[in-house]
Length: 281
Ligand SMILES: [Zn+2]
Image (cartoon, rainbow, N blue to C red):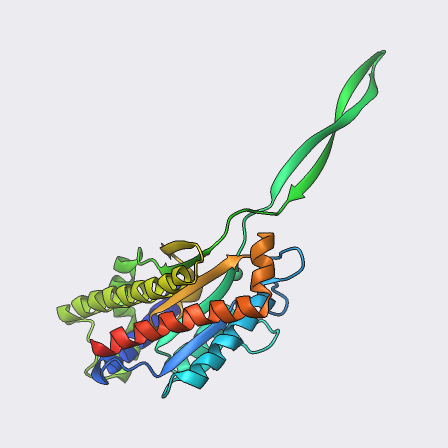
């Protein structure tokens, strides 16, 4: 994503943030993003692909919200085995003015290369015969790593964002009275926005993680990362890694009806706690 588009999205987010603040921080639209899809299978386990697990969880979670969270609309970035690009996913979230963005993913560790000595062969080097080892190379993709973690967008580009607001004169002009790049207050407002955005995302991540802990799952905590999927969505958001697809036990769990239900329920309860907290502010 270009800097301009990023800043434009940030600006839109800022507008909706102000609008949100004005209507009492009500959370009425939740965007669910099932990671990967279509040509992009994501991480692979022994019998399943990340794209299918993320879709099952997103659909289950959407149903829970529709059934039990009154006055909240669910927006999906995908509901089938298709691949929307990241900008397309952001557009769905931003155009519909989502209040929360939840991106669902399944973790995986990298392949490990193993070299095993299986024998020797004798090769001729000039007149001499030389013994050379024979190795069998295998790639091990099974891990003992387990548990869940949530990511929020790191804001290490704060000054870049603030400095470039001046480029958006046109957009600013379209929303008269909202922001004025010549007004020193604008920089302060933008900085406050960035901070509020991040702290809300961290709070959402913490609520989701503590629900996983309540279920007895391992929590690897809430972390910051410069993730494009979160950068482009102009609302607080988290990326949830729901378990390891290359941990055989977790793969079975994540593909089971119970696993999908429990993961969806942890995220649902996390959103609910976040919603109550935010709407009280
Ligand atoms: Zn993923």
